[in-house]
Length: 330
Image (cartoon, rainbow, N blue to C red):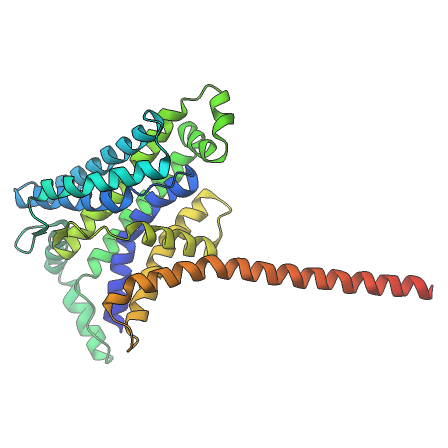
């Protein structure tokens, strides 16, 4: 149980970067971008083929993120310059990326089992410290499971994800970031102030897909493979993370909502892991589980709000009734 939940946190922290990208388009820009399913694989494909060809993992990961940024910018161009509907622009780019990703990898699945990745380097560095043996011995002495050797990966990924969160918070508070947020709220208003909304939208969608591709590049290295179909449903996972985070932690400030998105991604993975431990569910039911989680996250807060509102109105009526009764006795 401990090992499986640890794995959920491990993948959840990586998915959190993708969820931040989804948050930028869906919440900040109000842009329903479906490029995510394709750009996630693009990041994984570029990183995988680069590593296989001997490029250092850190550079390969950066190249994957840049490839995703370019894909996002093309989606933005299709919408702003090509005057294509935002939803359709994302669908077209996602469709095109399927073939592009196949071209990049040269095959449907590309293995990195015998290659050096960022995470294999981290594990080697951590093993050299000897702390892993000490922790395992300590846990064994109190009768607990051995600590996973990949805990260093989680530690480093939490640092990287939190760093990206702070950069995102800072960026959204700059002049350009405020303009991006204004576009999502009222595009006509920001255009009337002579802001170049087309360029801002292109850059915003590009950054979003850069985050998604970065997540894909890291996830591919975690699993040591890249598959052309690994991005299917990523947009739903990203939305689930955003919705769960906002429902549980609120969205009063930018800093709070970005933290909520990260926590939402981790909680989503933990929920899925727990659900798959139920006897009558298997891995083929993951999409169904995801849909149920999203529906619950969407319906539950509204249901609770309606109940609170009914309770408030009922208490108000009772208060007015008592006041009226007191006035009649007077």
